[in-house]
Amino acid sequence: MAETFFLPQASLDALFAALAKDGRRILAPTDRDGRTELNPVASFQEVAADYIQTILSAKEAAFPKVERLMTFTLGAKAVDLKDAEPHAEPTVLFGVRPCEASGFGALDAVFNWDTRDRFFNARMEALAIIGVGCTKKDDACFCTSVGGGPGSTRGSDILLTPVEGGFLAEVLTPKGRAMVALAPGAFQPDPGLEKKVVEVPVAFDQPGLTRRLKDRFEDGIWMEQSLRCVGCGACAYVCPTCVCFDIVEEADAKGGHRLRTWDSCGGPMFTLHASGHNPRETQAQRWRQRVYHKFSYYPERYDMLGCVGCGKCTRACPVDMNLQEHLAEAAQA
Image (cartoon, rainbow, N blue to C red):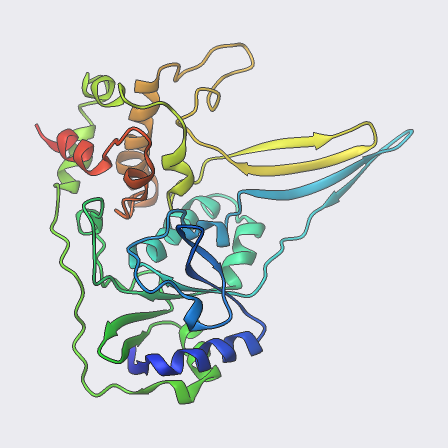
């Protein structure tokens, strides 16, 4: 059960200082070069004052764009292989929205499905999340349509909800209690604060969509919806739950590295076989895969959705594809 406190805004610098003294990096939304993105900060004054979402997702804290898995050196008669060790810097994610915080659960389902991924798990063990509930939304938000909410505590170790003069702090996990213990003077007894967040109307019937997809695999709707898609992959790279990756090697005559890099199932090369055959050779098939993966295959395999309704894909799309609208259309009979 969550413990609740009042965290005055004036006490946040004391909390940040205590976290830094404990050797933790703090990543928080900042406004730099006209973009709101997660960056390292030392004080609360550096945190963006007014934002709905960062453009990129927070998943890179546990699943970086590029990760070295091993190195190899070519000798005269042998190859010397060395496993890479995870670089898991103690990190606090501050200010991520509840949808983003819940996205780590979808990543965990994949990286611990049949084999535990030691790189991902090392970073998650070193990661703590202080989420901030939403008091604003835009037309791209649809968290309530996929089981979330602007005040959802899922995924956060501490969830802060803005109130006059500071935040209502819900301390939810042992990691959250450990952070409170680092700066006990920053947290005050809850005087009975009311948790108020923005209202996000439900946009479509998600259970109905998942049921409807069983009969729409060969439907012409995927061709119609994908006609605007340019296959750039922006939706996948900003998504908190997209987990496609590729394994590549960079090498010269003396040796090299094996790397894990982000990839996108929306790209034509993703399923291209060495034979030249491509089971998803059209953009319509790749768009269909994106929807089915998140709303049909994920529920079947992991008993959860592969979408948190953050709307980042819609905001990032260069041709204005609106995921919420397309899902609502697909959910209709």
